[in-house]
Image 1 (cartoon, helix red, strand yellow):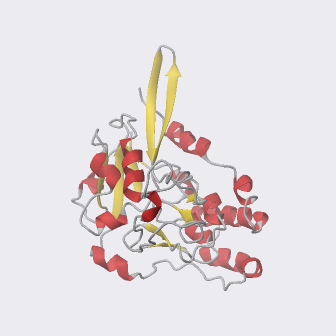
Image 2: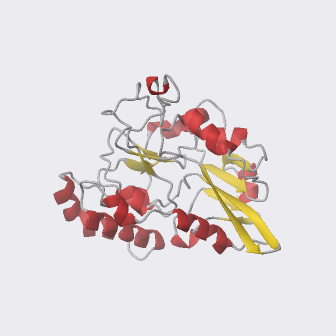
Length: 295
């Protein structure tokens, strides 16, 4: 059964939390957050430029947050990026191979020690068709690591930024938890860390946290980052630095995931990305995701 792309897109859209409901729970201007999310999507579509977005919201952001609002740099320089030798990471997921076992979800949580309510990698499941011609489908959904990320555009303190290796990063020490990026993300790939813990179920859970973007935050406490900040999939960047694949790729029992350098035309991800089966979720938004799916 051929599944139309709009079905896969709709699975993501159905999972999105309503923006106003998110922002009404934080102590920052809800209307400004919604307007910036809409403006960021206009930037991605090419309706307005990033500079026009900056000029439009500069005064309001500085009044609301008491910071100097900085324009988005097209290619931010980051010393960590040079360690990858010019590589630009991408992931390809073959939907025909995904069996919906959720091993990727479990391995991701174990690898990144994410708390309750924070799941970097989910598998959205549904049943399509009309009886007796029905089919169960599974859509693994990590962060898309967009080349034109609206989450970066709206961040008032520039805690979200794009690394040269293609990964969208968050500086937890800089993030103020306004959650504007959560509303701007059209994939629902960002989560707020409310400070919940698995300590009662797993003794020692709070003793150590996984290092993210090369930063170790030590023991998990209710008053220290990343608690109170927004979090997301990192492509297991700490594993990439060791020459290992992301945990979800390594543990996929159906070999549905491929990971590699999209700058290398001979890499498997480059070849699969050129397949007629390849597509990107909600690509009409202009976000240019670095997670590519095969129908």
